[in-house]
Image (cartoon, rainbow, N blue to C red; front, side):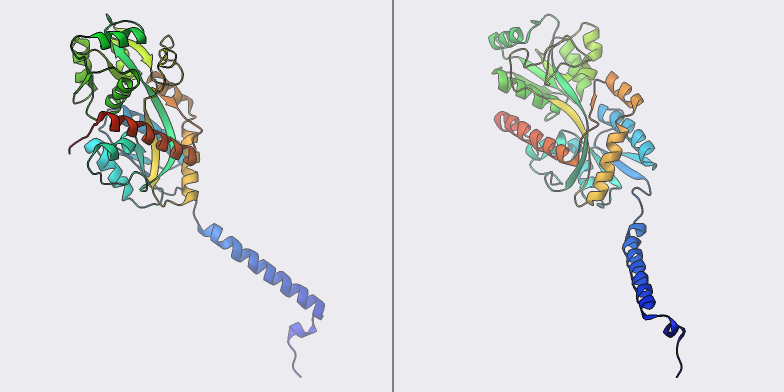
Length: 337
C-alpha cells in the first residue's frame, strides 16, 4: 500500500497544522481588502470657487487650497466657476463624481439662492455633503461720520426722517442686502434698498452721503473707517471683533436677534463615502491651524474655525437656512433670472 508523506505525520500534529494553515489563510483574506484600498487622496483635488478671481471668497479659498495641499500631499487646484450668484458653481459640484476629488466652497448663496431664485440647478438639501465650516466674517452696520454714534440714536434718526432713507448693497440678494433687511426687521426701520454691481460702487455713493446706512464686512469697510469717511455703529455677531474692539455688538446695544456674517464652507457631492468625508474633514481642520494662514486671515477680519465636523457644518447650514428664510419671506425679496 502506497502512503503519502503526510500519512507518517501523527494525527494530532496533522490536525494542528491544518488549523494553523486555515487560520493563516483567513487572516490573509481579511487583511487583503485593506491593502487593496489606497489611502486618500492619491491625485490632485479640484476646489470650485463660486466667484471671480480677486474677490474675498476667492482670496480666502486660494489661501485655504495652499494649506490643504500641504496637509494632503496632493495638489489642490482652484477653479473659478462664476455666474448667477454662485448657482453655476454649485451645479457643477453637484454633478461631479462623489469621490472626494471635487469640492466646492459654499457661501451664503448656497442656502439663500433657492429661496431667492424661481429655480436653481441644484438641490441645496440633497446634492451636497458638508465637510467643514472653514471661516466666518461678521458684518457691521456702517453710517456716515455725522450720524449718531450709537445704535439707538441712529435707529431713532432713521425712524424720524421726513423722507424714507435708503441703503446700498453690492447686489440684490447679496449677504449685505439680506443683513440690512434683518436690521430693518429687528428694529422696525423703514428704508429703501439700492442695489449696486459690487461693494465698490456702493461705498462710493455711501461716502458721498447718498445713503443713510449699509451693512458690510469689516475688511471691506476698514479703509473708509480708518479715513474717517464712515463709522462702524454695531457688529452683527455674538461677541466683539478683535479688528474693531471698541465697537459693541447689536445685543450689547439693546437689539437682539441680529447675527449676520459671510462664511466659507467646503462641501463634497452627496454620496461621497463617509471615510473620504472624514479624511477631508481632518485635513481641512489641520490646514486651518497653520500660523501663517491665521495671521493673514486675521488681517482680513476673518475668524477661522478649526474644529468643525461634518455634523456641525450640517447644523450650521440648517440654522442659516432658517435665519434667511424668515428675512426673505418678510421682505419679499426675489431675483428674476
